[in-house]
Image (cartoon, rainbow, N blue to C red):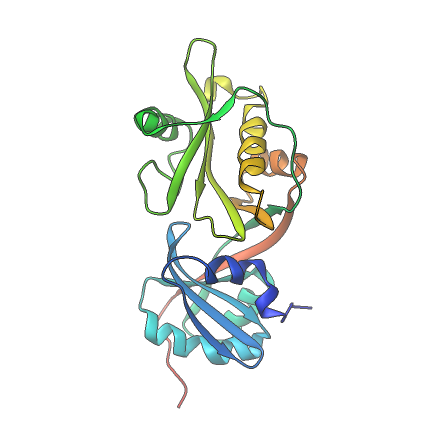
Length: 239
């Protein structure tokens, strides 16, 4: 059963409190348009599939070609069957915790602006597909763990956080340092830093990244299946 308690949905609330959010509501449906939310211009949806499908063409007409529908995998799959011109483009996992992880090490710390070049080099080497980049829109700060000789071994960013939901991205470990638990340590540090004063910490991860999924599950994060859709042709507004 799809949750239609739209105002309580963490995906919707994440978007609602992000900069530039615009909201469309109808009985049983809500769509929040938010530019540059974790790299993409997103239309975060929740509600009954029929109600969302009736509302979405109006939103698409007003927001432009760059905005992509986003929500639970079940809802997105249902909506694209009802709205001609849309197709599921990706499925992945929203992972979150509402409780402290408590497994950070003393070696983890927030980095400064002077460390941006090192972070960028590590991302280029270890995770070139990362949405979070030093100096990028929505990326607030980076944490890292260094080796005893000062080499930066692993990083993670706070990016696209809101007042209620801390958001983590750009988790990357130098290939030569993998297998030492550093990814778990940096994620635990960032999660526990972002949680106080918020209700949860979340991130998005691809299903193919089995090592990352295992790390987050091991830290106590729970998984929610989500998906995004794209336009395959013009979507018409019913008249």
